[in-house]
Image 1 (spheres, helix red, strand yellow):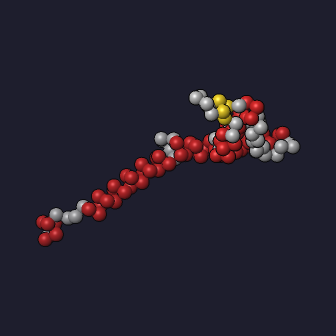
Image 2: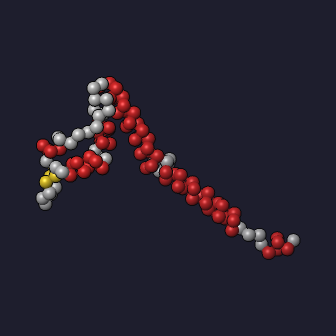
Length: 106
């Protein structure tokens, strides 16, 4: 298994819900290891190791790229929001920049 693939799987809502079944709720929540080992992780192409690892790597690359696009300050969504804000300000200033009264009379 690709460790990063497993990490992404462990962040899914279905995995978290399944994991919650195996937590002993005391003062400090304790994960019951016997139960944890029963949680299934979906494996692409389970009968073909090479094909499975290649598919896991492909999925990880897509998720890494998506993560970079949504969380990177220099690129992705935050950068796009910043650019749209500047564009909005530019057009707002153009729309609200009325000619002065002397320019209108001339």
